[in-house]
Image (tube, rainbow, N blue to C red; front, top):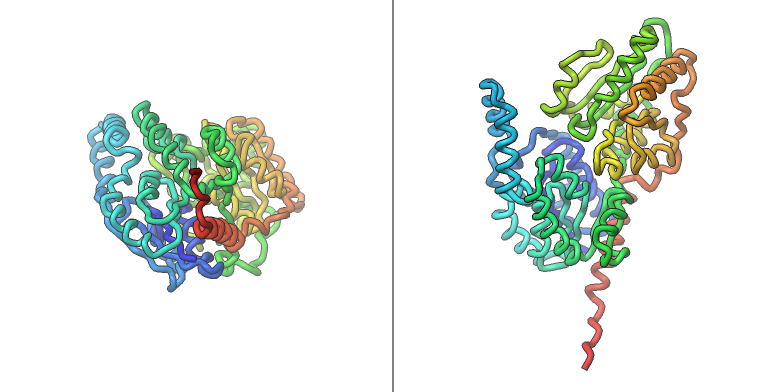
Length: 437
């Protein structure tokens, strides 16, 4: 079998967004799938991580074509210039309005002039095409393929458009016009969570349930080879800190406001316990959340900035506690942050600040730790107090005993994708039923 993966971002682009398609490319060849990747040559992205190129096998052909977008550095310079003149908020609003009105369904539509002829050419030599989003404008390439195409939803389209593009009624109407035609033409639709799948089937009730398949994200044991066998973090001793690590981008749906409010409450009522913590944020912080760190800094919180994937995993492995945050905003109940699967693999107890939904059920089902609502500072303070006291007693934190994690191995997930491809190919080989006379 032969598959073409279409993904705007691919290594050396960094960050969690590229992990899914990168691991598909890594493990599909071992599942009997000859894999080619079509991606942007000059993607407008904030992060590069050269270490991720190690995951791309030599036999995977990567085709890169240019986008017409300005570089991320040029866009950042515009923001900085507007900020220096005191016009940042106005510039943001103006650019957001322009992007929503002119660049539909998202700015990466400027990649399509080069990507469209490439997909026509490359799809002539494969059995199927998989298009992954966000960004979602590459979904428009699916019908151009000469073979059946698969839509891969890493996030929900409407939710991503609302929060990342500040989408208004015009963008909503555009999605309502574009998405139905695409999902009905797709041979299969992949969703990263069961909740995404349920929402999609509820929105398009005429869809055959068998065409919509949940393929979660997962963990790759190879990513942890450098920390395998490392000693666990040191137990409590006078003067020793309880190290808690949040790894990942901090942005609109992972805001730490609730965590910081809980820490302030704990510092007021039990300052010695609050002082036990050394809380490290590893990853990029977007501008909208930077003020949360800078307005009233907490002495126990440190921002270490973006680190390569290997280093971020090492920082998780040496921690007593892993933190994961999903704020309570519309659409967030459906998501799993990608780092939850790294937390699974590294085996550190997890304190998840999340609403009732996909993440909370995952943490509880696999006994990864404890879930607290992200907008209940008193409950967060109570959970942190419990963690600190447990640490002082030398007992396991949060009674975490991870179990049932095998289905989340990236190789197993790639194997399930190979089964989906095999079914598509087999159906293509079946003779069409004769038309009625």
